[in-house]
Length: 471
Image (cartoon, rainbow, N blue to C red; front, side, top):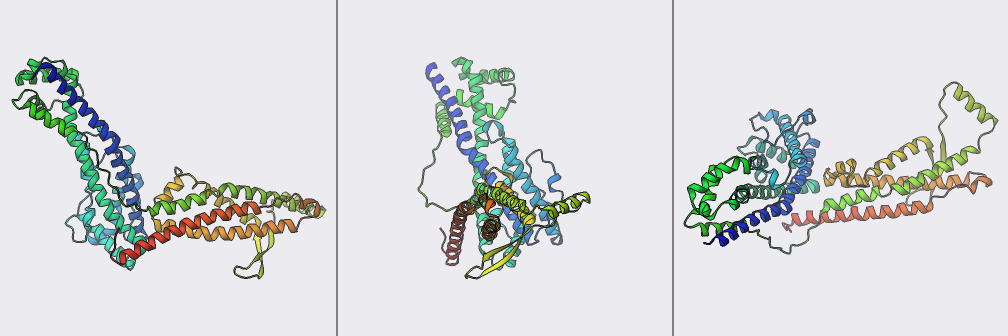
């Protein structure tokens, strides 16, 4: 093979290595990182489900434990009587480790040496997710399998939430298997990346004669590596493979095989049936509730203004004297109560109800603040809600629907009260809230649509499962 042709194939190999590294960094490793993030949500949901049934005892020192590197969790044996405590501790260790991986591990070829990849792959096998049975020979898998069996028994087959949880276990087993496979592929590529660096830093500067001579080539690599690649330790096994690719009688075959191996295999795009993410649907309802804060803030401002207008009408001499004595003796103001009229649900009958203004407004303000913390997917409270089980979020949304319906009835009654109980002069100053209440009712319609859509999909999935049909 001529010098020019030899240089050409060497350049092709160097470029192929760089292209493969870019592919891993841009396509494969982001998917692996996202897999760990999804796995963290799953682990939190699993832990919460077990804690609610008292099948595990949370580790009180979980948040005090510092992690500096990826490691497998404790696998030492323990008695069945200690299962709740020990499994709680180990699931806590496992969750902390997944969190550490999501936060601190850099998913780039340059940041994942083979030793770290091995640790990640070993950690992925901490539990036998595809075989969680009480008969497992592995201590942690056996304990978790027993706890899950009890969980299913105590919930009489599991119901919707448990069904989704067990489906998540099947999915996480497949995901971790794929993530480990991708990580191993990156680990195998590190050898080619090592050889590619030597080719680029050393071989491109050597004569064809030196590169064709095995002994001379090996000597030059040993000699130049400390200065050309100071951060790379010398690996005799990998360098020997490189020398063969340059000097062996079948070097053309070896290099062509290498180029084929480095070729990026584009995944075939298969048209799959579109699956519905029920978690996104129910979290959409949470965001819809969070979007109500602007209107609620406007309503609160108007209610406060109307209250102050009405209060200003009752400031005669006796009232001023009473206020003076209260200030002198440090006495609390008497509670402000409004007797409002509301329509009894489902009939034309009207009923009186007392609203304690101060406590009503305190609760109203608290609700607005919490909803405000849910109107951004980046907020801590939204992330906390996002990590809960779908069943938990669904029940929470149901509760909010009831409470918001009740709140808007009371706000409407207050609106009428202020209009009817102010004098003619001040009545024109009263700020109505009917427009805002209409907007808020429409927002609740949106929440209800998402809630109903979620319930419909969950019910359909449950029915199909009972019939033995899976998508």
